[in-house]
Image (cartoon, rainbow, N blue to C red):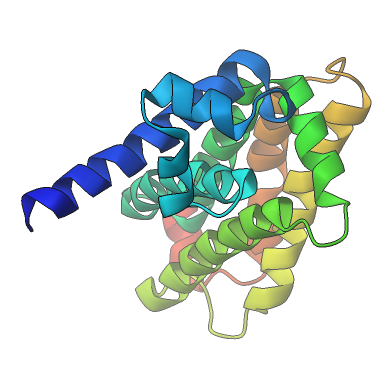
Amino acid sequence: MGKRQIAAQETRQKLVDAAKKLILEVGFDNFSVSDITEKAGVAKGSFYTYFGHKEDIIDEVTHQNLYPLRDKSLSIDGCVVAKLSHYLTEAMSQIVEYGLVSAQNWLRLGMEPGNVCVLNKMQLDMSVIEEILLSGINSGELSGDIPVMSVRHCIMAEFYGIVVTWCISNGAINAMDLIQYYCNQHLNKLFSEYQKTEAKQQRRA
């Protein structure tokens, strides 16, 4: 890779890092492209070399946060429930870290026609959950007749339902408590029907 390509990658990452800091500091809806470039220490025109809109860089922040989490969750030496619990609780922790107002604005923007920031995030989450389920089938923990797509959608409905509940309650309901309760109390029941006999025996042991 040449010096110019390295410099371009570094500039792009500076912009992404600046956007992430601004989300944490002021919330998604309270900064502009100019704020991003100023915080990154680059010319405003540089932004449009790498991103078309503010929403595009928000998507990039999301991807950079979730891909390491995906890798970590899949590499956990444990059952499907352990992998899913890790992913769901850490993904919720990231949402909470960005703050209640950011989450409320994020959901509101997701309801606007043509705005795909929430849809992109949800699709990424679903793809990771699907990978975890398929890893359970491939390892022999889960039977091949598990309806992967239906189970994936049910888990996503619970996860985003908790996000919405947290937002509607204006933070009065603790999102982390809810996701931990769901993982501890409901995921095992969800998969019990599809666990192979030997996997059930190992879990009891």
